Length: 121
Image 1 (cartoon, helix red, strand yellow):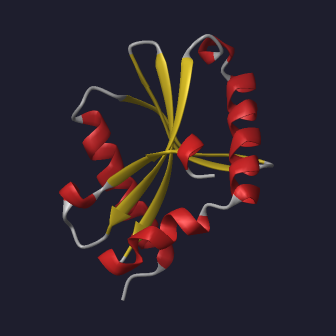
Image 2: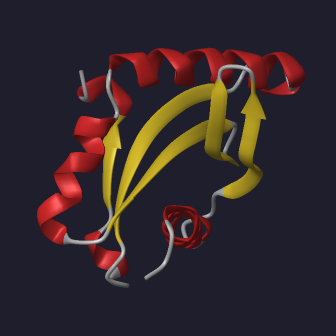
């Protein structure tokens, strides 16, 4: 059985592949600062997209990814985004969108759910 790091990387790769296929360009992957990690940071048409990826082994547990993304984690993510933008001042003027990608690890790309972070809390 694969460990959680391997499963997480597989989920990120699936989300990234889907986003690239629609024209998003990867700026950073697994970017870290003292507040946490940004799984994926992408750009398209002067828009900035930050994606928090949650992989799940079974469809029954897919919603647990959203439940695991609690208020504390959202605060840490907001701080990490601020840190990233401080390091990348050219991105300051880009419109920011943050989404949670719930990725089933069954290999079915169609099952990925994209949830805007503002709808999670």
